[in-house]
Amino acid sequence: MSISFGKTSLAGKVAIVTGAGSGIGRASAVLLAERGAKVIVADLDEDQGRKTVAQIGDQSHFVHVDIADEQSAKDLVSQTLSKFGRLDIAHNNAAIYLTGPEIGDTEKSVWDRVIAINLTGMFLAVRAQIQAMLETGGGSIINMSSASGLTAQPGQPGYVPSKHGVIGLTKAAAVEYSGRGIRVNAVLPGPTRTPMTQDLIGKNPGLLDILNAAIPMQRLGEPEESAEAVAWLASDAASFVTGATLSVDGGFVAQ
Amino acid sequence: MSVSSNRLSLEGKVAIVTGAAAGIGRASAILLAERGAKVVVADVSEEEGRQTARTIGDNARFVRADVSDEQSVRDLVAATLSHFGRLDIAHNNAGIAIGGTELADFGKAGWDRVIGVNLTGVYLAMREEIPAMLESGGGSIVNMSSVAGVVGQVGQAGYIASKHGVIGLTKAAAVEYSARGIRVNALLPGTINTPMVQKIINENPGWVEALTAAQPIQRLGEPEEIAEAVAWLASDAASFVTGASLAIDGGFVAQ
Image (cartoon, rainbow over all chains, first blue to last red; front, side, top):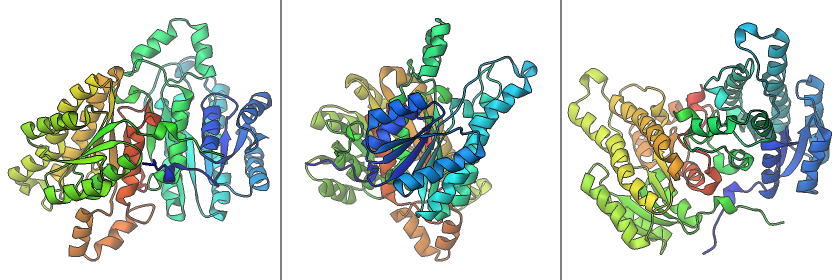
């Protein structure tokens, strides 16, 4: 018997992935391409972004973007349209993670930087993407929130509020545009083995045991596991899913 | 270019779907089989259940089961093991809707029945499924909640309580068993074009407009759209997803 994967295919679709130079963004870009999409690999880091493109091959293209910059977000979409002619999928993944002091001791400049990239950057990206998707008859937007979008951990000034904000922005956009064919959802990864997490573990050798013990599944997630959620939400298999939050966290927020 | 779908495959896996005679359960049983699983079609309704099994063919087998009955659920899992030799996937979907009266007038018999099937039935099913899955090295359980698992609706006290309870039961099981290879998640469908909903619409002709207007996506969902989420959560593509509640509701609970 032949196995059917019909609605999970992304053949013929064009995707943007921001922050695609490493970690979850890179894994998503690679998987979206494997499922058949053409992929714009967007990142601030040109060297890393071009490595992702080299891994995928001809059906991907690098675009340099500073997601906190209004013009850069607009240029990203217009370059996507000029390269591949349409936009069907956007995975807004670019973000920064700053650990710091408690809120009472946090500088406003630190707050401003996290909010500018993680939340305002997402607004700027979504705004530009929606306009392009309405032109081509709809699309699927997958915004990167986090387990920190539902829960808080100490010493993450700005990060926790920014990721909560992403969920609100996702619902707001979903309620407005779902009737016009654009689905908008949020993915909420738990602790995941990205270069960022590896770096933190490298500096703090006890951290890996602490993280494992804090996750019911007792291990970190892999970037490819979040990418699977992105690819599914991007596909027609998720045609009635919009305004939803999907945790990919080994049970972290269930406890 | 060949499109890669391997982690979505259910080849070699054995599934139980309760309430598989009609609606979402039938669509899920069919899709799980299309993705390669062998499926036990369980229902109290024998004639329609056998029809689902016939639609699927050799990869399916009907087992009559009343999920509110302890012995019947034991027999269901035993029949699955004796016919297909293992258990990897359980979609605990069987549910009933009893409503129409406000809480102060909600009869205890109706309450007992809706809790007995929708909540105690999921507990009984998981209690039998989990040991069988531990024997087979792990598995994925997909429990049927509802948007009524996170919001209230008038005249549905028992249904609302049961579906909220399913989310709690899902998280409790996920936290306990995820480290031993069993993932447990809940689905929250919105208003879906099932025989149950069609019957309500036929009796109240104005309702389809009201129901449609209440969905940001401006239409009802189809059973096949829920089945896609079941098949995804059942697969290795969702390997870090556990304890999660996934709304498939056209944006209903986002508003």
